[in-house]
Image 1 (tube, rainbow, N blue to C red):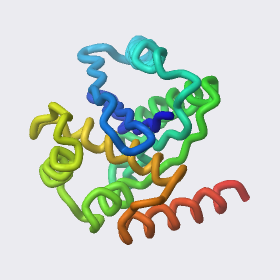
Image 2 (cartoon, rainbow, N blue to C red):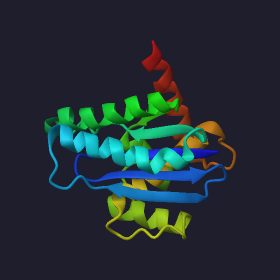
Image 3 (cartoon, rainbow, N blue to C red):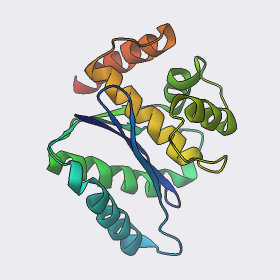
Length: 178
């Protein structure tokens, strides 16, 4: 049983998988480089398909970072990328939950205003086998979202801030279905 986290971006998408006890499975970054438009979307789609293929049928939940509303100029492009992931995971039969950036930060560190450097540092401590560096913030975010997906499935052993985030996200999920 695996749990998937995705930090979508037009230039550097983080993708991570953790196991049923929170163990590190993999984390990577999809870098479309100079690709634009449909070519960029196809590259991201094909790379995700390749990376997830060995785990299909074993991924129980996924969490994708929701939009950061303070960046409206990138909304259309990020919406395309997020839609690509939503459709791909739908095709794979993987339930998805969107998590706002501040919720991911609170889940990882206990408070929602953590910076990228601190998120990476905490991830390095939590998953010492992860070879991430200070520049791997997309992977760190994706790892925390994968762990959040695991918490949705089984909240045993989660901290109080993590349980608060899970409760809030489940409420948002219900509101989204109305």
